[in-house]
Image (tube, rainbow, N blue to C red):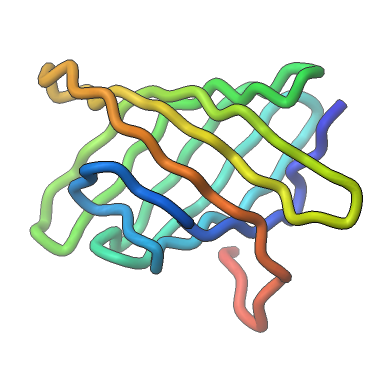
Length: 120
């Protein structure tokens, strides 16, 4: 099974997005097939996602975050993992906002080396 535990990702490419930028960092934890991440940076003051990962590395999540405009937003999404020996992991994501807009967004995240700081 794919293991996201203690992986750190940064946004590499963002479609039209409200809050997530290339400054947004995601700090992952995993227990079995349950994956969690805390994220912040860019316009996100604090966010959490929770999801399930399957054996092919497809991650189905729901997420919520607050932003610098004092808004609380969320939605659901799917991320597909690309790995290669000696290469950083890449997550290709699509999600839909829970605000009824039915707007689908895209995002690419790349694994980075662990930082000096981490989400607790």
